[in-house]
Image (cartoon, rainbow, N blue to C red):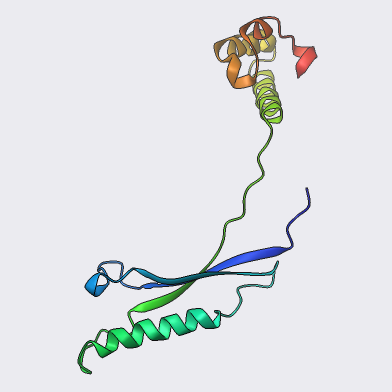
Length: 145
């Protein structure tokens, strides 16, 4: 699977005080946009539409109050990298990994009776290891591990 060569950053203009709501029923998030840049280039500059929305929202807020009001510029610009999708393993790979961990763990803890202990664990939860009860009952240490 080829690695993606870009990173996506999300910019948003949001109400900055987590303890209050914006006045007059205004939304908490005014603007939101995503920007793709080359991988490892770092966060880009905020796009012009984000800067415009930030200035417009804050100026409109300041105009509502007297000049001596201490609350100024309550909207902030936030930037975050959009989380990339993690790789998903197939069910077959997942079951194989689980079985290998079980075998390794049991051989380390109980070297003389490992096969019996593994078979008992497989019979308790055969679907967790991708087996039927009959397959778990006939499992052998040298076969699938």
